[in-house]
Image (cartoon, rainbow, N blue to C red; front, side, top):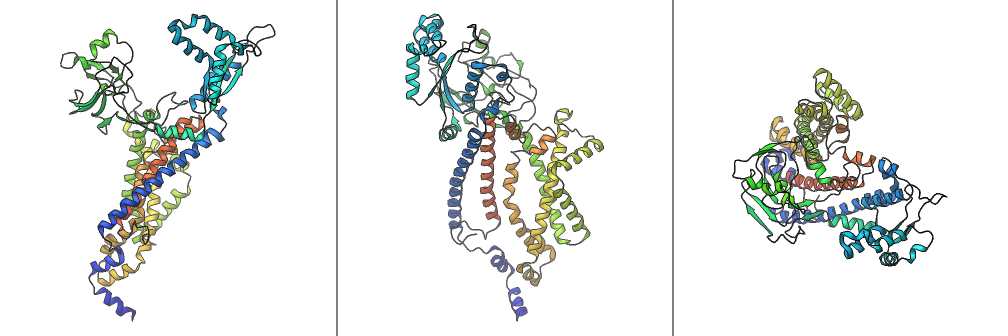
Length: 561
């Protein structure tokens, strides 16, 4: 009875069989496209909410649950200060790190009397009296009018007034660092900190950025680019002169118009923008032969590392040399540097390792499944067990020893005379365990598919084993693998922590661990935003890619998978 049904089904058109058994799809393409759009919108909304929750949780951990004094563990300036000067320095750093807001009475008095006396404020009697008032002992400092004004103003704004009494020896001499201070301090609420961070995450340059009243010609327009590109979008009144331009450096299209503000590094990179830290090369200065903007079209050339595509507005007075070299007050440029940025180093290693793992791991996994229980399958399983069981540090050092001794490859990035060779060991160390993982899962999915009903129908139809494996089994076994491809590719941007640390790769993989060790709150929050965003994007892309490969997957809220 069963065999007669099999023969009947096998007699049907094989395309119809596989459309029913494999695709299982009969939905209208327009309805599917609409459902996909709704799904993507919903996932984006959920992702934004998830990102906010994760950033809030990390901020809570960093700013509330971790002892804030830990930021001074490796701070030489803090160690050299004492008494009130040390306390003042602590409040300054806490304010810089985002823990709180504080105002020093001395700065308040300076600003007040500068508005009256200008640059001569420091010799004004009122300013001198203010400075002397806060050095008085007891409650005598409260008799000063500016002190009362300061206390009333900041108390009304929710600040706590902190008095650091002058510290003196018994002889009456002030101790080192014992100068008295009057401070207004207010802790920052977590919700305020999160709101400020998200609000400032993206900024767009406008013609109102430059606060110079003498600049009257403000515009954004397209001009011919004299420094390599066919054209450029330039601005006047914007922070940068070149907002959109082309050059010879990958990815060849660049912009200074929209800025991603991940935060500032306070410990490791001392005040640098984290976006610049990870995206700009940090090698040696790279000079080229070019011309200053005011000398274009002449026979005057210079060898300089200045990148004129990065020009920003100079608020000061121009020197005589600058007036000869530039047409306007956009005179401040960053320098060209050789090599790749942190992000590029991590991505190059990661993407090459990804290509290797998919081109080797998938075919080997398929071969192991087809030759199940043969010597090929046995050898493959031994490799999988070895690479999964041995700690990553162990096999990385093993590969490093083989590579350096047998093939004379450079071990540390900085020691490589030929920079290209420095990428080989990190790439291999990153690819080999991933190859084992792909072999394992591809073998498993293939074997699962080999036992499916549609394979029996295909054989009954008379399809060859090669057609069955290459067209049907492999395609269906690839569906779960496909979901992880976007995450693997985007994950190349985050780097590999262990691998980069062992080989001293100047990438982003080691950035988070170093930030945690040095209590660099700015980098910790930035890495959280960066990693979480990439993870959420990869999940959405993985779902879309899997739905593209497998027509049975529906984005409908009911009845879909």
